[in-house]
Length: 532
Image (cartoon, rainbow, N blue to C red; front, side, top):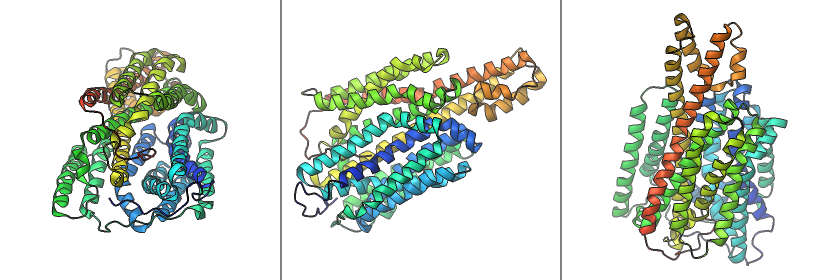
């Protein structure tokens, strides 16, 4: 990819002292948005009379749309102008957030928040990266990247707390309304942004673009269809996997023939880049799987409100934030591969420790130590993986490489969210049926009816809510149904946590491969070049 043509802006006078703050505000909204949705699951389910699995699917779909279109959107930004792409991305994200303030059904959330908002994110991230690179120079550019990166880190750290507070004491709709206000403030300063012209080739790799969307979309969409009990699951996933294989072949063929490609396959000849993007994907699968199972456990099993759930998740986010900052500043001469290996080891131990604790936990305090361990591990990963992955890439290609890295991370997040949610519901259904059929308390005539009812609705109910629906049942039968509800839900959440554990284990195995690669000096300044 040809490097952006940066405007001639004197160092220290780059754009405006206000512009970095506005860019940081835009990044804050992008990151805090998903945290708000995660801690508000039970409130959204209650207000919209929908299901937890439906809300989970919307969260996974938003990440999937962003991942599937980020490479294409980067090219679109090259052609229509990075400033215009930045504005369109902000407007799409604002539409999604505004829809959440007035939505009366899950369909509205899927269309406006997940799809339109996801498309907005895919336009916004690469455009923001190019605009920072082109509007600032020298120390001013470094400061702008640092401020935007800090905004993302702070949003990740305080997102569960902020979302929990707003949802509990105001409304989850107010949180999304505040996002619209912030985006409005950012857009009010758009005149401060200088456009960054693209001087590279203007051909479009339409086939490569289509294959990338079908490939990433098919794999995750197949999981979501399975989660909702749909048909043709294997066919959809096979179509996605085949499209990804065809994409790899197509890119190599186009490159050999000298035609424009969606992305340069030559990037993958660097072993550090290949293993780096796979580690980024494992990290995000781990995070996505954990952020489906843990909020549901806190809100459905412990019956916490959004504020209590946010406080309980704070050890994970705050330790991740703190360790990332500490490791970034004090890594010293330690090899990045060793730090990444330690990070995956801690993450594996932390999340695996939650699994046996979950059925016995009487409060969020039982998760404190495992979350601190897992958060510390994730913090070590965040501090190293970006620089490690992009270190062998030359300056003129680092922006494209960062886009690929962002796409792999977003795909990993959507896969983790979808796979953990799908496994959870499958185990939930099987457990309900098995436990009811083998109950010595529930009369045989009621077993099929109760099993069907539990399969359809128990996933979105706490025991308190379910108890209110069982007023006509005999005390012994009621107690048995509540026991089955509790046991089946906990078992399904434990199985869901196997997704992040297995992803962390794969990352740990990959970490030993990383250690065998030689250390190299970065070929370009990659600070801040992976904003997503």
